[in-house]
Image (cartoon, rainbow, N blue to C red; front, side, top):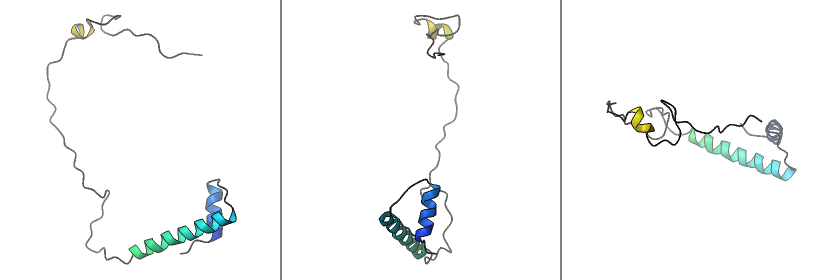
Length: 97
């Protein structure tokens, strides 16, 4: 399937792009070159090729979750400049203008 100048104009209109005649001709030629390349790829024998979702096989490396002792709330808050019983107290950062 070849791309025509009218196809490029239509796509440009959908994207709200404006091209002059030289640019339309250039993009028409470039899109047709891309389609020729894709058509060339269709000549490859892919009968024994497994489909992929990604070109590189990535495997997640998981670690087992282990409970560890943590510092107490009191220990965490002991150097806080301003605090409540259980929380850090910080200045308001969102203005309501």
